[in-house]
Length: 379
Image (cartoon, rainbow, N blue to C red; front, side, top):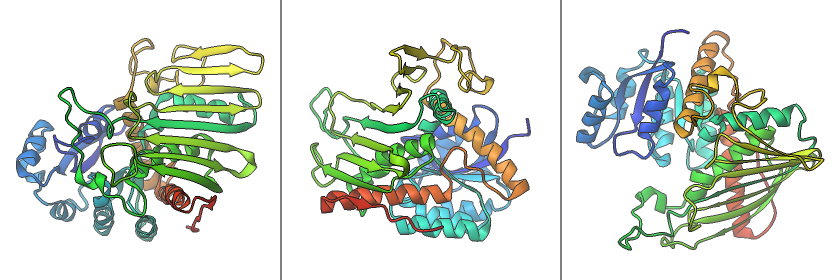
C-alpha cells in the first residue's frame, strides 16, 4: 500500500447531509488523508468541522476560492461536496489551479455546464470522478459480474425504483419537512432527477454498459411542495432490445429509501434491495431460487477488499462510499503514470455528461408527452 493520498474538501460541514459520509469513507481504508478544507460558509461550522477532523489552522480556509489557490500543488485531489448548483463554478476553478477533482453527484444542474467541465478536463489533462455510491455495494458488483459472464443469459429488461417519502410526510407533531432552498427550485432538469434519477441511470450503465437510445416519461407532483416535481416514471429502450422501467419519488409514503433493482434475462433473473444490501436473490430458468450473501459461493463480493469484517456482520452505505474512494485512489495513481482514466466505477467526465443528457431527455419527454430520442453529443 502506498501512503495515503492528500485530499482537500470543499463543503461537507458538520451540518451537511453528506459531509460525514465523505470524510469518514474517504479515510476508512487509509487510502486518503483529509489535510485541508473549506467546509462551510458559516465560520463557526467551518471551524468546528476542522477541529473534529484535526485539520490544522493553517490549512483551514474561510473561502473556497482562496483554498483552491493556496492549495495548488499541495493536494492529490479536491473533493467537492457542496449542493449541486455550486459544482459548476467550483469544478472549473479547481481545474484552473490544476487540481484533480472528486465531485458529489450530480456533476452539474445543466447539460451544457457538464459539457464545458468535460471539455476543460480534457484540455487540462486532469482527473474527474463523480460519486454515485450505490455501485459500491459488493452485491451490486456481484450482480454486474453475473451479467457479464452470462449467468442470466441475454438481458431483456431491467426495473429500478427509488421511492422516498420526504416531501409527503410530517414529523410526529404534524409539521411539514424543512427542505434546502435549492431543492425547491427546478431548472431545465427537475431536482428530483438530479437527486434520484441520476442514480438509477448510473446503475443501468454500471450493470449493462449501455445508455438508452430513446425514452418516454411522466412527471407529477403529489407532496407538500407544489412548485417542484416529486414523482417520475420512465420507460427506456436500449440497443439490442433491452428495456428498462424506472420509478423514483419523494412523495411515496412508507418508503425511506426503497432502492430496488430487478433484472431479467433468458436464463434467469436477480433482485437486489438496498434495505437488505448483503443479499442477492437469484432465480434460474428451472425455477430454483437462491439467496446469495458474502459467505456464499460467489466470485466478486467474497473477495477480501469487500470483507472488512466477516460475513454475518453487515456492511452498508458508508462502506459502499469507501469502496469508491479506494477505487478513486487506485485509478488516480494509475492516471498519474499512464494519463488514462479507467472509469470502471462508471462515472468520469464523459459518462457524467451522458447521465445528464438522459435525465434532461426525461424532462423533455414528460413535457411533450412523447417518446424522446436522447440527444448525445460526441465527446
